[in-house]
Image 1 (cartoon, rainbow, N blue to C red):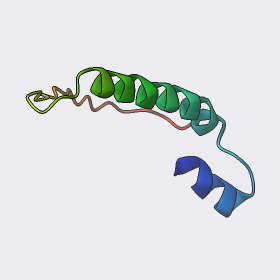
Image 2: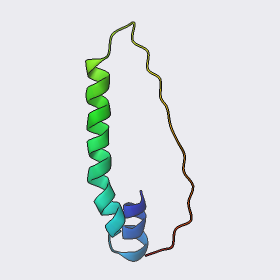
Image 3: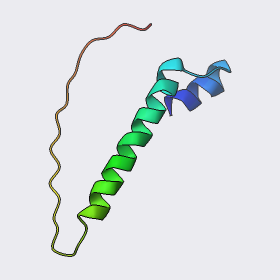
Image 4: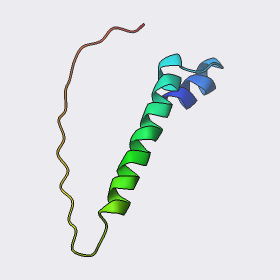
Length: 59
């Protein structure tokens, strides 16, 4: 979404978003593979997450 927004507003791609897209696609593939390998009617999944908030400056 960030890359799309940059394209629409500024007419150019967001370099950080472009770098992140393949990383996110790889994560999706890993998650999908895990679910397919562990998917039967008795399987339950538990998701653990950590949220980290930090201050960053624009590059």
